[in-house]
Image (cartoon, rainbow, N blue to C red; front, side, top):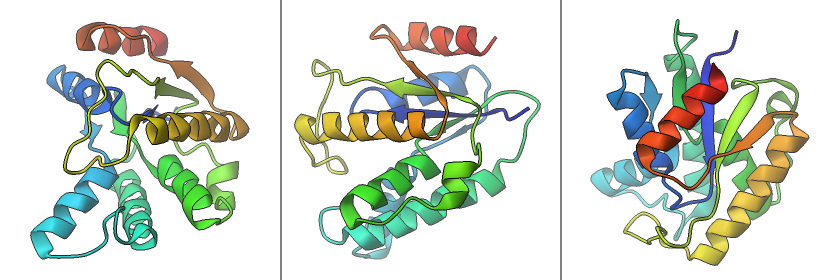
Amino acid sequence: MNNRVLISGCSGGGKSSLIDALHDRGYPVVAEPGRRVIASEEAQGGSAFPWTDMPAFLDKALQMAWQDLTTLQETADWAFFDRGVIDAVSAQAHFLNRPIDQRVLTTQIYHHTVFLVPPWPEIYRTDAARRHDLKDAIAEHDRLSKVLVKMRYRVVSIPKMTIAERADFILDQLA
């Protein structure tokens, strides 16, 4: 059974906080590739940022997401991914007009249930690594939702509730 669980959806919807809560409960987690690429580029004086070089940024995010899958192979328990390969290839298809890689379309990379964080305007904030506005984040959510359904994942929208309740919700859905 594939125990790698993808948490995707709207930017600024609480994915990273949810991942942290699952980590605090003892589950293996993988942080969002995009934010790690930005941190790495800043530390190295690089230029592969979504606001300056989207193609390079997306290529690095996709490479990192594939590496995450090989680094965190099957585990005895659930392992949770804050975004991943599907997010990166969906963004490439949209921003770079590239087709989605057939390996991604035809292979269940993650557990058959994917959790989608909905737009939540009340908690949405921009920051140094999230410079796009809520309108762009909602469009991203909608694109991801369509891509995940096309890939035949069971998409479960995470309700707007406390972080602990969201973690409980996910674990209950997977039980």
